Length: 334
Image (cartoon, rainbow, N blue to C red; front, side):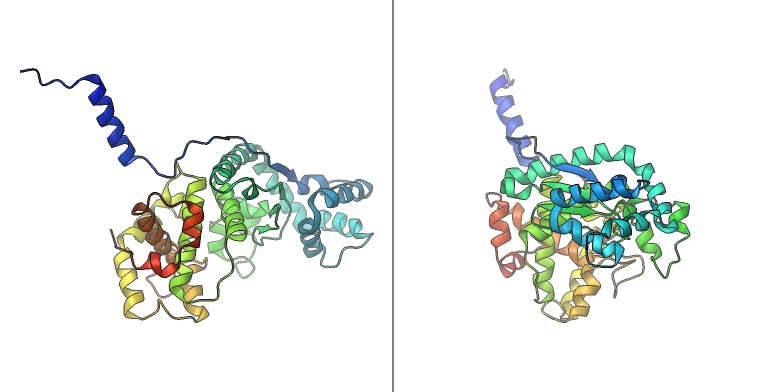
């Protein structure tokens, strides 16, 4: 008896199993290229004469608008005036800022590869949400270690947040001014991840004042959309965890969930519960010292991912509109 399957049957079976195992977020892009301008403001101000700074300032104001003016005013600690270029010059020539800017020079050769990854991420967002999810400009400007900020069309990034934690300049900053766990997060490989996370959060989600459960689900939605922007990245990367932290979170998922249920925390609205389980820090407050931070975000992501695995036809736009309790009640710990 001939038990050999015809080639057409083999191909059909292979396609079936491939479809079952493939990543639903790894979609085929109809438009792979997007246009984002990357502008290094620091390079245009650092080590420049005052008259050059004055001309550059005017040009950048016209190009980058209010977000740029806000960032500059934060640095020079005063409102913008016609003579602000002098304060900008003084800022970039101060000893401390000069040290940071010199150290940031080591990052410049790495930026093109990260910008390429950002373009790819925005192309995925464009696929799911349209051109409105693609910023016009991303500009690098000294933010004195503050977070990434976004306007409707622009993103401001402080590259000092991505200087290596092993840098002597970073090591000499007292821990009272910059905690060690903050220094440890200074990893350039997360640049594109952090930028798109902040952009997604600002552009697609409203600020919440709700119970912990709703905050968990919103955090999970944000991370799931971020995963859609980087569909081929490891989940540990999307969550901004090391492999060790990610494995801890997976292994302790059930016990953390049970803790929240037993302590009746899910429907509490006090800020401390949200801060402890969602915010960045050395660990998650209330859990063991070897726990990673933001374990609430991890839980939210797992809940949303499980929901989407059972609702494969649901678009990301529909996911965002789905009520948190609809998603929450489907949660099953894997």
